[in-house]
Length: 303
Image 1 (cartoon, rainbow, N blue to C red):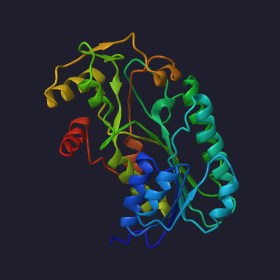
Image 2 (spheres, rainbow, N blue to C red):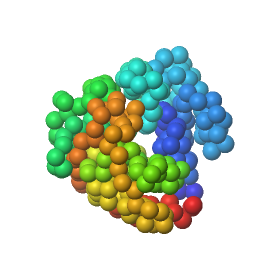
Image 3 (cartoon, rainbow, N blue to C red):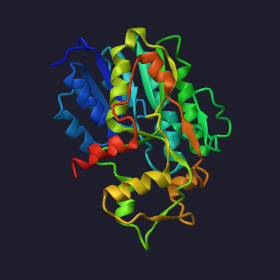
Image 4 (tube, rainbow, N blue to C red):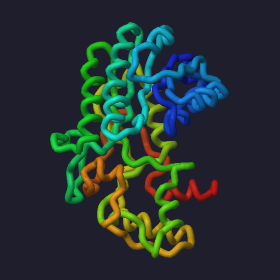
């Protein structure tokens, strides 16, 4: 077993697609991992992975605080929305972060807090490159709630090192949304448009980046970091490559079809290219899957 974490205690909030994979990686590397999840079935699964403690609770409440009194070295907040549109975002991200910050006041030894936010906070368009200094004042409604939760965390910089990771679109094993769309294309069409850039990051690279930061907790630099593979491609290019790889006809796009999720984000996807050099320069992290092609080739091996 890799004991690089020297028995550090790490608490995970939210154990969905990212959190469960992260829990497995951290346990394998010698960390003492606990988790909070709102899903009882997820809790049952987590208990089989070697975690020290698993608490089932709603993050935005404070009753769970008493269940996690142990001293923790770091936490990772990777919760997803509780559903229900903007009210779900408010509950999971804003109210949930407030509850976490209140809990941290019982943790004098806490050194690091990591939050997985989203690059959806960036409203920029026109195909320009966007870094962490970009203006987010015109973010969509969902993005404004994410920004609020980020600010709640970063306001605690005097007590521990807060790190916000703005994640690009996550794909990986079991998350094959585009593949499923291509396979089920109706009349050779899929919803949306193909004339904007997709900014992507493989699940395992998200886990790798977080693990890298946790390894350097004592020397970490707080702040906001974009997390993407740094190789944005037009959605039409990604879809065409996937269709050929799947031996499927290349579909066209139907811009008249707008998903409910996209409607909450303003109805259209902005065309911007996410720059993630800051994370690489600060922590020395490099993506294992350097572009969508290498990532999807790995996924195809498990089909």
